[in-house]
Image (cartoon, rainbow, N blue to C red; front, side, top):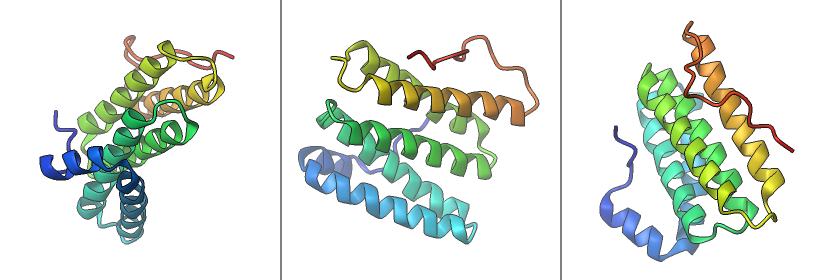
Length: 151
């Protein structure tokens, strides 16, 4: 399932210039919100995907701060909800699942400085995944998280 929205060269360049990845994240967020405002979902999903990838790059490059965790979570939710507007349910859920897996990976490698934020982000993604299945009129698959709100 496609989860890449940036071309390989752009992804490579942002990965090697993380200071620009942050500004790219904000530019993509702004463009996404603009297109969502006018219900231009096909255009919005391109920018939401760019924000998601930029946030992922920031998380890869700087995993020990809170900003990348929050950015990655919010970008995943934004991308998922935009895909949902296009009735692309499989990709929408796939993005949430990728985010959930990545946040749990960060949790397992955690040095206890970001635990509270990680738990909140994981709980938010879990809640969104459950809401996704409820909106679609299906039972929540057993593979999805039941409760990630451990404190």
